Length: 418
Image (cartoon, rainbow, N blue to C red; front, side, top):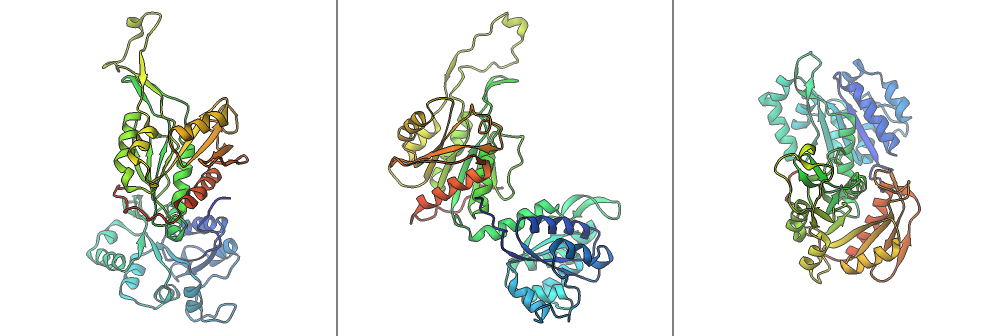
């Protein structure tokens, strides 16, 4: 049920001569597993590091190595590959190949294909630090970026020479994520800005203790990834430090309900959808202690006076008024009377959609990788979903959000830094 922007796409992977060429095999495997058709072009230098047979075994397709060789369908190789490509990835991209691409040279199969294609190009540079920092390379990078070529990396780390510095090719997963972002630009949420909240808020008792809940943030992170994969600009307001945010998502770290409310309300007029997947604490200590409370001083009992936290969705309802934008989606994590409680929250908070789930169930509770939700709408519709992965649940919700947008105009581009 997940929307996969890579599935069914034709990806041309250009592999240049460098020790990082072995990582291109890992990248190829990831792309093929995601459902892409991968066509590999290897320069002469690349073949000194990895044999073409490696890529042929992974892709089940011939590897292009000769400039003037015909492909199986007898079409001219670089023209055929250039036309078929949905994206051209160059990984590793050496300083030599970047220089050729910058000036439009076409002296091998890879550079000729790059010159002929109209598909987006993504380069993952890999070279020694001195080469990366050279004025010539910097000039070439500027020229390529000005023409719309995208880049991922390089990273800092141990280089082939044994030195430590900037020049390592980005890891295969990072390049995979960059390909996903390029291909997602035409998804059904393109030009939309979605804000997702995730995790459980932490209301401080003292500098080392807090009132919180068992929320892991997994559902919110799945929603952020799914929205990104469908082309949206995504802001993730999160309390979770244990999860790795999806690539390409703007992250706003928060801790308390007040922090989260401020982050959401500040951006409310610049987003198209708000999905409140966070488990916001309902109560907080009336006064947090300035220093750690010592058990010797507290005796056998510690009495805490709790007060209500800010109701973020209620504040959103007031701020939005009766405007149709942004679309607002809530979650109801319940342990009893699921539909009754969720329906009441839907009406009380004037939501466009609410996802209700029984967190006492072992397969849909906090921390689980799966979820079983029921979707409720203001018009009385109730849609129970089967047990799904949280990513699949996220896509089901976003499909309904896309339908709710209708003809509403998109909001201004987000201003959050990644």
